[in-house]
Amino acid sequence: MNVRTILEHKGRAVATIRPEAGIAEAVAQLRHKGVGALVVSRDGTIVEGIISERDIVRALAEWGTDIGGMQVAALMSREVVSCTEVDSIGDLARLMTERRIRHLPVIERGALVGIVSIGDVVKSRIEEVESESEAMREMISHA
Image (cartoon, rainbow, N blue to C red; front, top):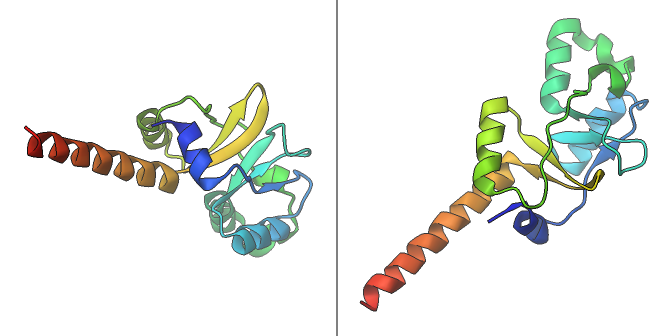
């Protein structure tokens, strides 16, 4: 199973925000859309960064409630780790574990085409294992 399979099931919609948007707007979008991260992009195609709930919580711990007036660009992660549609679920699980990240934008030919979360990876891996298990049961019952 690969990233393309995940996107075929969950869709390709990506919650984005402009870098000059305020942190208050980012928090409102995270809450309203029920996502854990927003891809930072001026045009919805080129990824400039990513801002997650974790980034905001860390900033709150460091600066307190003074972050409300800050721009997304001040808190976003600029070195975005991404994947492609052909990457395997196993590769994503390893990458997310090693880098301690929960969201990977999917980039094809330089353009944002989706996003995969750790929840998507875990769900896909469970489905993969269940499918393999069912195939094994079928083989054994027909042997």
